Picture 1 (cartoon, rainbow over the protein chains, first blue to last red):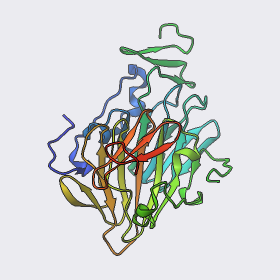
Picture 2 (cartoon, rainbow over the protein chains, first blue to last red):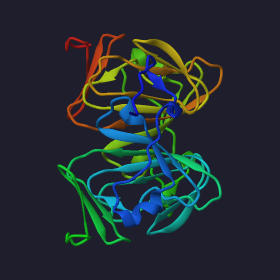
Picture 3 (cartoon, each protein chain N blue to C red):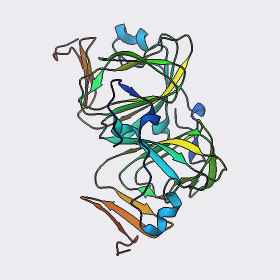
Picture 4 (spheres, rainbow over the protein chains, first blue to last red):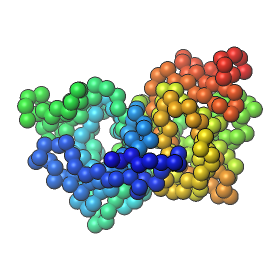
Length: 158
Length: 158
C-alpha cells in the first residue's frame, strides 16, 4: 500500500512506503539489494509516466546497465554522489546535476553508489507501449507485453 | 539554442540557456513574466516527456491555473517556498515536497511564488497527443493540434 489517503493536493514523499525488491532473475538481485523506491507518480494517480524517489545505499546500483527501445528516462540527483556509467565511461553526478536517456539510443546506463554515503535521486520514465529493455553487459533483454519476460539478448531462453 | 554540445552523458542545468516568454494572450503575460525555464529533457533529446527546471521570482506564477485532458504533470520543489493552488485552496510547498496532476482530473492547479525569495522547482509533463488545457478561472481553453489555439471555454473565439 503506497497510496495513503491525502487531504492535500501535495505530498511529503517520506510519508510513502518504500519498496525494495526487483523482478530481475535471482543472480542479479544482489546488485540492487540496497535500492529503495518511493512511487511518487503512482501516489497521485499518474498513468503516462512514473516518478520515483530512489535511495541508494553505498555499493548499490539503480539497475543493471540498460537502455529502452520505446521509453525515455531522466534522473536528477538530490543528495550524495552517484556514479553514472555509460559507454562514455564513469562520471560522478552531484546534487543539482541530471542526465537523460532517450529511447532507442543503444548506450546502456545505470547509476552506482560508489561513495560511502547514502545517495538520493529522482527518476522519471514514461510508459509508452511496446518497450524492450536491453542489458548489454549481461546478455539479457526484457520484453514488456501482457507480462514481463526476460530472455538472452538473442531472444533465446535465459 | 538550449542544446549545448556535451561530451558528458550528464548535465549541469545551469549551463543551459533560460527561456522566458509565453504563448498566452497578451493580457495574461504579466502573470508569468517572472518565470524562467531551462529545458532539461529536450537537452538530452527526450521526446515522450519534457522536464523543465523552473525559476520563479517573487510574485510570479508557474502558469494560469489549469488542468490537462490527456497529459499528466508532476512538480518537485527544490528551493524556496511555493504556494500550490487547487480547488482545495492554497497550500505551501517546501523543498522536498511534490505534487502530481493526473490527466482528466478537472481540478485546476498552478504554483505561485508568494514569498519574498526566488524559488526553484522541477516540472515534468508528458506529450500524449490530443491534449486540451482548461483554464477554469480565465474562461479559456487551449487545443493542441498542428498548432496551438486558444479559445473561450465554450470553444468560441477569444
